[in-house]
Length: 404
Image (cartoon, rainbow, N blue to C red; front, side, top):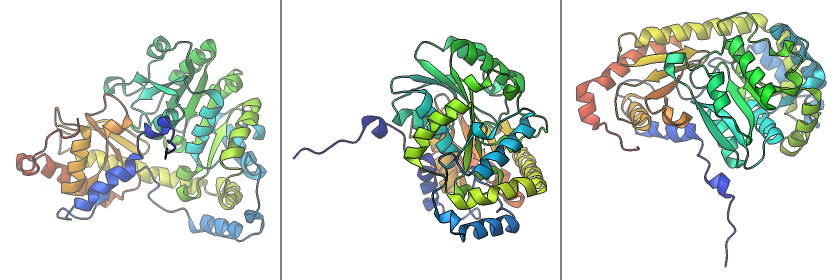
């Protein structure tokens, strides 16, 4: 009897990489101390008790059990529109905001709205792997825009222009960047908006880590440009900024007509975002400003601790660091990043993600997500890397490229 087949585009899509990498830790014997998990970009500390109480109060209400609006609760849309207007110094209306079940869903919805199977989306490499997976399963070509350490992993608009043809429908940028931590300067984002507007393309900007920049000025001035409603789609994550990833709350900013069409997608994949966290977030936006600033300072201190921890290991080079991430060049020439990361996990209990997970030409790097690791743990990283780099350790583990 014939068996039905799953969609080939889905079968060809990579498996979720974090569970795959995490499986390596099963072979770690604990000889160098407890596991230090640097693989996933999650908040390191829980939200304040007062916010948890607000969520619990909302969850206990009958209102939280009912369907909400497709685009999210009005109070949260309004609060986030006001907060974004303040952050960007430009007017963003409630009708230009949609609340989503996390930022990944915001990205998925945006892509479904702007591109079809057979189209092309320009994706700087290294890229965020869930972006690539989304494009792959939808049959949309991810066309790489290679980035380099020498340029701080900042995309070049002239190189992007050379890669655009009639099949390209959108350009995706991530700032602060996952996996490199690079923060794109406002003038770079403005140049990409000019390019997108001139070519009739969408510019999708994933700003998940917007609130973890070192700078206090506006991330960009795109929302002050009258063209933005016909060009820009901006994505955001409450999960990161308010330390509630399990509640899955993100947002999408776009022109009103775009939001209306995205609603068709959201109605089919979520109907409405989960209500309890939505109901509590307007309170958090108004009352947790000081806590958020303190969290940002704490993560900046962890970044500084990571720099210090790697200082005695000069063969491990931090090519870029910012927000939640460091992009580190490993010292083993000709050895794949998967092999290096696997041996780090199994031999040292140190889990980072291979650069190969983030696109072509990335095998010389590892992504280190340090935001969820306390400073005392970060201090240990240098000692573990020093042991890993030792010639005897290499001989012991027979380090070689088994996955190229």
